[in-house]
Image: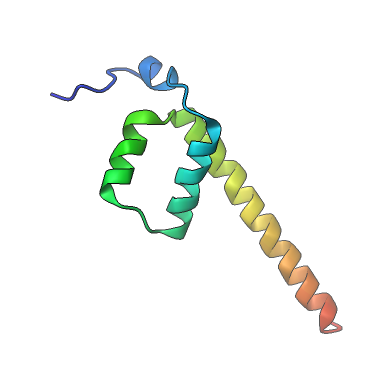
Length: 78
């Protein structure tokens, strides 16, 4: 058996800094992560923070892509 939390309330009760969730999401976007780092994240991070960090990061990524496309299209005279 695992020594980790047993219910969702225990998972949500975790209080690591929010920046750690954003760091874990950034590594996921990049696609490179050691299994030891993943195990550390699973044990320490709040799943609600991960969901929020993932949604915010995805929105920022899409927004930056749209700005890049707009900038390139404006530079070509299209």
